[in-house]
Image 1 (cartoon, one colour):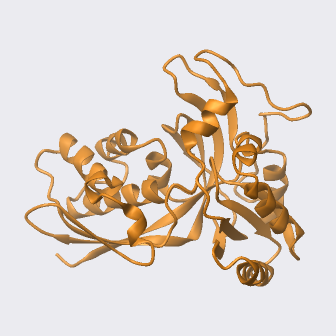
Image 2 (cartoon, one colour):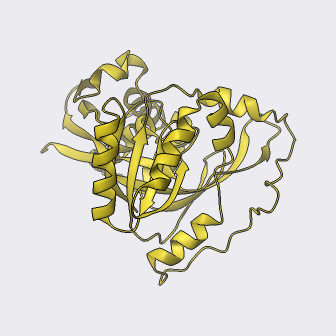
Length: 294
C-alpha cells in the first residue's frame, strides 16, 4: 500500500453559544464551525505496529508522544476493531497547541480518516464516529473537516453549506486553559445560560444557494459566549480582536473556541494577506496566518 496522506485543518468556531450545563457536567453548546486552509499534515504507512514521529516547526509543542491524540485515536479505533491494521504515522506539526483551533483534535480526526481508508472502512462507519467521540469533544466535528453545526458537548454534528470566507488567524501565544474559561462562567449542572441582553440563540442560517455576504450577516448575529471570560483571563485577546477589526477590509473579528486564537473575516484574500503581513511585522512572536474558512 502506498503512503496515505491527510490534512488536519484548523478548526474555527465562527459562533459559540453556551446554552447551559448538563446533568452529566458537560456544557451544552451550539457552534457554527468552519475549517481553515492552514493545517498540520499527517502521513500513514502500513507497518506491523503503531508508531508516531513528529516533525515540523511546532514539533516541540507536542510533548509526550504517548499522550498525543494521534495515538489516542488509533487506540480508540482499535478497541472497536480488534483486527485493525495500524502502521507508522508522521505528523508535520504547524498549528499551535491548546489554542482554541482544535489542532490536536484535527490530528486525531485525520488519524481516524487514514485508518478508515487503510482498513477499507466507509467514512460514515459508526465505529469511526464512536472512536472520534471517545477520543475528544472536538474530534467528531474535525472528522468532517468542513462547515458544520456542532451541538451538545460536540457529539452532534450537522453539515452546513458554508461559503469560503477569507480570513486571518492570530494566536498571541498566551495560555487560556479551557477548564478555567468554563469554570469562570460559573454554571452548575442543570443550569441554563441565557443569551446576553439583546441577543438570541435562534439564528436563521442561510441555505445552499446563499452567498458569502449572506453567511457573514448571519454569523454577525451570533457571538462567542466564552470570549468575554477569556479576555478577562488574558487581556491580550481583546487587543488581537481590536487589531483585526481595525485592519483594512475587515468584516468581522472574534475569538475561536476558548482562545487564545482569534480570527478576522476579510473582504478579500488580498486584504487578508495585507493585514496578516502588517500584524506579523508588528508582532513577530505571534502566530499569524492569512487563510480561508470553509
